Image (cartoon, rainbow, N blue to C red):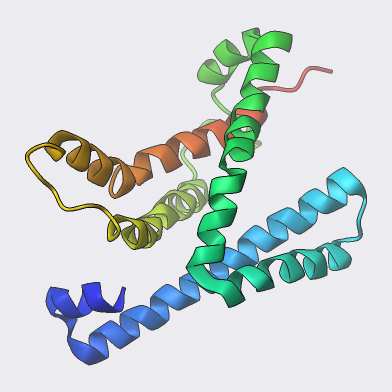
Length: 189
């Protein structure tokens, strides 16, 4: 990030400030992910929340100490599991209750204030959606390892750059919609 911002004309001080902002995003991201994992340990394995925070922190520390190499190895090893777990809930719903897909697309909401627009709701939704913008900066870490663009790989090169750079927001938006799906229909008694 430091090299990118310096090359973009931010200067040394600007690039340092940008790096501090980027580092704070990383801390916030790890804290958020750790809290999600600790809550999953509590719900799935009945591990107390405080102990779950300790376990998640201890799992992350070796990755932080060993840097991107360890993280890259872990991502390669866990990616098939991640893909299966990402798709499994939708397959389960499609098999058990396929009508819920139609109910989700027609659900207008269930707010005690009626169907009027809530600026607080818009702000909360925008906050979650706009958090993906910082994710593009993280993708730059991976894009810098791209091979040089040649005549032979030109189309693949552009597809990789567009899908891994700005296209990451599209994948993130689909994941957000997918995350809303299990909760976006009226509950039956």
